Length: 258
Image 1: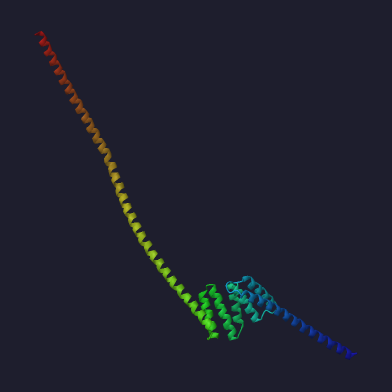
Image 2 (image 1 turned 135 degrees about the vertical axis):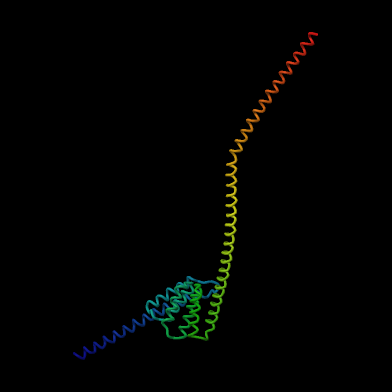
């Protein structure tokens, strides 16, 4: 009876081991199925070099994520996912993924490759300083990588152009600032002159206003004197006329008597 129990337990153990192996193999097959399907979509997206097929790259991303849900720590599948994100121009996400891969791996070639792609993601996102640092770190792990050297020089050249442009903009800004200062000085000078002219004009007007009553008064006196003189002259003239008329009358009377 005891032997039969032992035999049954061994069979049960073997069955559990078989089931575990079968489940593990099935899961592995499912994971590889997702990877194969993701790779298929990725290859289809890269056939036409004249355009970026974001639809196929997005399908590849979905399949890679399904595989990583089953096996989260697989660096190759992580790399595939990061590539699919980069191809969709999701540079922020791809940079995070490549950075995570480079931090996790101890293999220098894998680290260099991840850092190279990290530099590309940062460069496409116009983060020049960060991309230059990533390329330099990639070369520390693989000094003979010509692609990384080329990309590093390209990023440094872009950085230099950016600095030169900034310098030109600053000089132009300073020149405009000085020009505005000169214009302000001229404007202030003109304003001061206008203020002086206006002040002088106001003073002249006040002076005219003070003199105006005196001129009016003198004119009134002159007018009265002139009227009085005219009246006197008219009286004298009338008296003369009367005398002349009287003399004429007398002259006529004398002639008649004759």
